[in-house]
Amino acid sequence: MPRPKQFRKICSPPLMQGYKPFGIPRRSLSQVVLQFDEYEAIRLLDYEGMNQEQAAEQMNVSRPTLTRIYEQARKTIAKAFVEGKMIMIEGGEVQFGRPWFRCKRCFKLVDGMANHVHCKNCTSFSEEELTPVNKE
Image 1 (cartoon, one colour):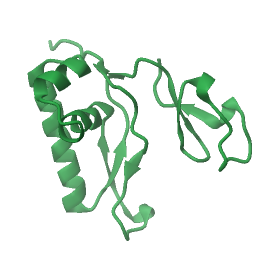
Image 2 (cartoon, rainbow, N blue to C red):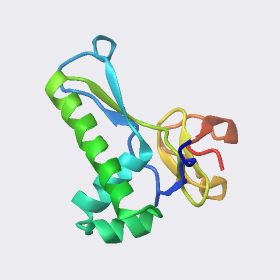
Image 3 (cartoon, rainbow, N blue to C red):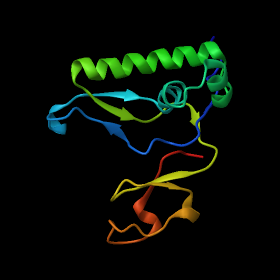
Image 4 (cartoon, helix red, strand yellow):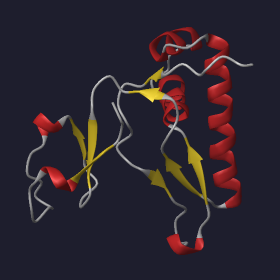
């Protein structure tokens, strides 16, 4: 029997919820899911330029586990590019360290309920307009 998955530490959720190919209506697209830990592996290795040891330590996983996460992320992104699919970034066994929310109206990312301020694009202001990104 395999061991249960450990929660992977994620600095913060991505600003966006996903991507879609240009010029194709959303209703015509199928989607692939890039999990939060896969997004974080891409961010740390490719965007931040960390080596695998550093990134694995930051995510609280072993280096071989990080390599598997990274390979899966690359396959998911390649499938979306080649097959013209929408990428949704969600889910996975992750831990953000603090609660994150997203506005239901403008989709702005909010770091904790205390940091919720009235957005210029939103007509109303209440805690009901926020949806939790993580379930901590």
